[in-house]
Length: 171
Length: 228
Image (cartoon, rainbow over all chains, first blue to last red; front, side):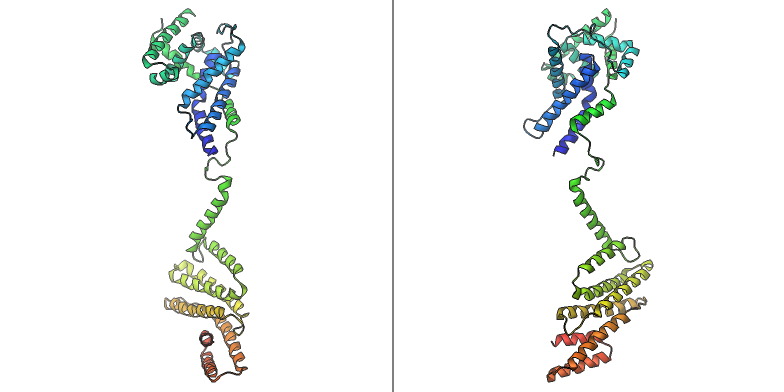
């Protein structure tokens, strides 16, 4: 049974590692921090999965669960850094220190521009844009993760896109 | 001014952000531990290895059971016979070898041409071994059950040999069996001659001698057993 759970979680890990990594990286803009938070996300998820899977408390929506852990960890990360600290892409190192990713970002100014603009949006706007346009999640799924109605999610998405356009035009 | 479509296309470019492959693998190992070495064969777990081995052995024995001398799988059948011969009690070894010889004769009936010679060779080897074991048998002291089994198998060999010969297969090597049985029957008659017998037993001894003269050694032993 533990081996079966391990295999199941191995598939989950393979399916979601890129998405969760990207989600965190777009919020913290540091590969080192992203790696720490991302591995912690999966570790916490595995602990819950191993403990509860097959019981009544089993995780119903693994994707939503992973994103929720990641969001909480990002929030905790900024809280630890101090409430006074302003999280701004202008003062944070935007380009990841990892040579591979750094090179990729530097070579592509468009990519860098959209990343900065996105990171400068408020949290709900970031999430809705990332989930719907980047990760292709349907509106009902995004609405569930945001705990909003579908209509409210569409409105949020529309506003987020306008805000993003404004940021890009300003840069 | 970017259109919605252009803006969305730019957002989608962010999918290029991906973690390093090495980091992904190492992190997974850190969380879940090492992948099992036999992951490519999910049933080959150490706990199941014994069961798997037994399953394979019985599977091979099943296939080998219908193999004939000259077939690649016959070696497995032969090894099984050798193992059984070792485990057979000393007093029953001769009967067991005769049983094997009979099996070979029965095989001959179904053997294709390429298996005939190896099957006959195996039969002769079994008969030699049986004769060797029979040389240790003394009908006067052996258990009647064992003598009865020897007689049954010896008679069956005669029948099977006749059947095989009727199909045109020439089988040599049974002289050794006759010789061994002759010795057992002769010793038995010699022993009875030295005893004081009732009139009825004397008559039986006479009949036994007649059969012995005719070379019907199995029948000598059979007659003795019936009237024990």
